[in-house]
Length: 182
Image (tube, rainbow, N blue to C red; front, side):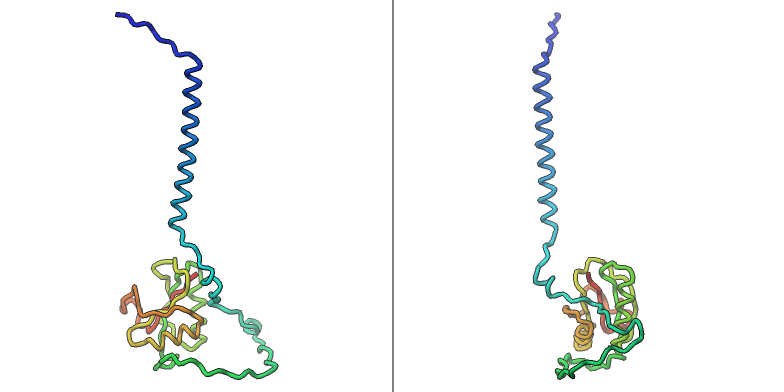
């Protein structure tokens, strides 16, 4: 039995194309919306209070590069007594492992020289397992809380904590760890 061939008119084809283009545009808009909202869920917003409290880990000291002594102070300031940290060992006997946790080339070596200028021994300089540290942190071995607090105070690091995420065998004999953050 023969069936008659049904011809599709031009209006039906044009309507089909228009509907397809509209649906493709809606799908693309939904994809963009999902990507934007999904990205917003994974981004941690910065706390403005933390941004205002951060201090640079490294300071430019006048006269160090040229070898000239800094200008003498006009008026002698009355020194406040240093806060007690409970440190028992002198700085020269405290070994510090410096880890680069921010990913910037040479940051750990620069921090190690600063730690040395403060009188500490360097137990090693290396990269941290992760480069996603937002702020610098000082970790200390059990029994060396005072030394860790003093190191943090000397370097202007606000976060001090017992050893976490590292085993004492990974410290290479160091008493404290300085992990550099961004």
